Image (tube, rainbow, N blue to C red; front, side, top):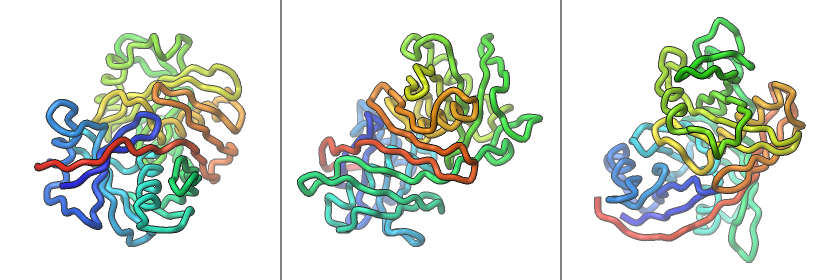
Length: 280
């Protein structure tokens, strides 16, 4: 089976062109391909298919084989793939994932897509819809104690659930693997598990962040998590409406008006690493 390894800010996936390839057991394939020692290696697997509600469909799996609803870095790479491989000649494409349609505008240099701006849709803030178990209709700056430490969390869904914690120390010095795993697995609070972001506001236009993704662990970047972090920061009055988020794998630019019905816009790079063929 032929594949393409791509990444957005180091958030890397194995991409399969299902216009040419057939994946019989998608969950099993995701686990095998994602393995960094015995497979290709990646944060998961993304299948590129013909869309029914959009130009194309993205079917995303985490490294543990669980299905993911949305991946902001992944969807930029899908848009790059379909343009670079001449599945479309449009620089504005629509891509669906689990029924949600996103609209992407590509930046092309010398005939190759290098970055993309994604309309990520409006954030979901209602607790029951994220989902997060809370007595409050929305979880904004709500205290939670995990692993013996008190945090104030703000919960947002960008098609998948996020809990955002603003911390005083640099995220580089934070024990992400310990606390991230405790957040992800706390199904009493997060019935569908959760992606946990730990962020420090540098100033009103810059945030530093690390992320622990459900089903994968720490990744070098998370597009939906970055969007959720900026939404959380704006809701808490910490930043302006246009913010650069500094992740281990690179920077993403996020814009949101602060109006709950308005879309969040994400701009960032997309890169092809290599192509290959594997028997699974």
